[in-house]
Length: 225
Image (tube, rainbow, N blue to C red; front, side, top):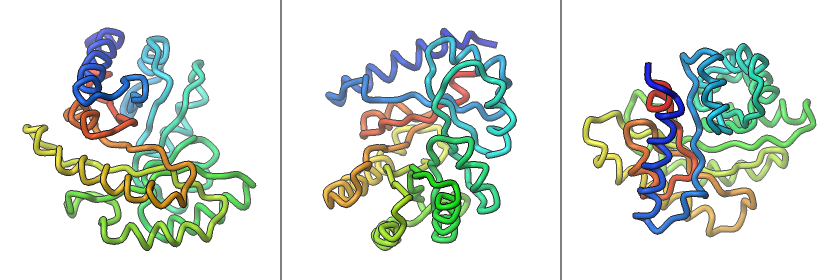
């Protein structure tokens, strides 16, 4: 089992190289350590090594693990969110990456009103069109964004996508580029003042995601391998 500190050093080095190639500031890019299947002791290693953001795919895993952590971290939900888990998600996570359907928006708004809190989230898009992936199609995005204006407690902060798993990471570049274009189109409207995050790139393709504008990287296996 490789050392988490060493893994993080290698990842940060690659993020820096990719950012500089794209004339970006590496300090604007956040590494989120995905802790799916990772025990608390290993998560603590990552936090001790400077990781300030962690992510879980399932609400119940966050509910189980988060109280056991000694470090103060930002908690992200990156997996599909079922409507019956919304209340728990809002109580335990700081940012939801996977808002992808009107029914979920309605439940988020309902629970946000009950909890009297603002809810920050990202909209998940399925850029690749894969049937196995969740997310809105790009064509659905304008109407979806317009609908969000009816919910004052819901704060859309950006976009998320998952690229296809591939042995040729370069093939993911058009997908990341398209997400950035859509992100910029919405930013240009000025309608959403908290609009700032592009969540794309995982262990196999994060250097390309950085080159294409990602500022939230969801990296699991490369950290905890």
